[in-house]
Length: 324
Image 1: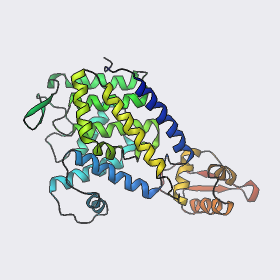
Image 2: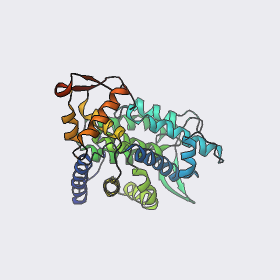
Image 3: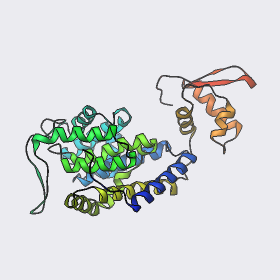
């Protein structure tokens, strides 16, 4: 079954705005943000998503863990962060339309935190806020079939990927397929899906804006439950995505390093041969001398190879994965 929702004027307007901003991101070469910005955004993503679930570690503490420094904090919180770091570092490896991949990621994310991570629940569960039951999840004996239907929707339905990513996020919260970790899996897998729409989403800290609007996030989840469709939640998440892109564009005055330029151009060129002029057409604000230095550095580091001489010089990136 296709998950229920309605197309509204707000959804149409937000999709148009997001599409326009993705165009601006591509023009500014921000679809692969500079190295330092990627690191900062990844840390913000992990900290925000885990803080929503009650984790106490700060951005500074998570940075210290990434740098293999000792951190004094509850063991559970540290383990949550370490697991999340592993998961987000492998974001590009996950198969967005694979239920098996979905289970495997939960296994990594919740290892040491729950019994049988990566396995769906068999018991009935409910979500309690204070003394009030705010959500009763579907019975455990139908969870697998609900997830199968959801992944079939992802793979086969003609809905826009932007919309499908929001619906998937909501449906994971509704189905509540695991004993714990459902919120972080819903947010994470939306990022996995959005990455298929644009690579910029791999490093865009969408979760930090969700954290800033946490009360509204949970309120709209509850309203969508009561209304029996995810329209309100789709509108909310599209607005979050739009705002995240807006923040990226506002703060885009970060100078690209030679490493950033080479990595950006490598994604564009693939295994095709190219010239220095091709490289300069991609980066119109650099001089010919800077372009030559970039390309020489890539050759010296083994990222690319050079053939020909002077006017006949050609470059080609090597097929093997190599971190420039």
